[in-house]
Image (tube, rainbow, N blue to C red):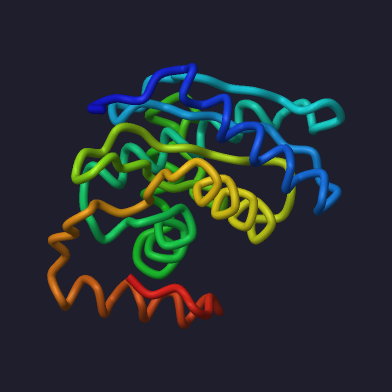
Length: 174
């Protein structure tokens, strides 16, 4: 499969909703293609009214930065990387894209083999909870956040793992 379709998102959304009910935090979920165009979005009952737009922005941000560089494996790394280097760039990017940039947890790429087929965003809980829901749903549906044969330079891998350590993420190395 070389692309993700709206029908492919149903099982992912259902798995997110399952974990959301367990956590007690209603959310919205969005999936975009590798070009950032919306494929599917869903807002759970009782999720905040702005959460669909935030989920779309998270997914869009993931697509934009992931296609720029393998050093951006998820929304948390994007957020921390720019916080440490150039926070104004994220603000400017949001302005230049009509508010479509939101770097936060709960966003990751979707790879089929070595092909980036899309990205997802989840919004409505804390960043950590959004991340937890995304990991759970990915595992349920078999979506990979990394290419099958990741060609990431060792220096980039070390840099990402260092960022994970600084922001307190344990047990997740690239």
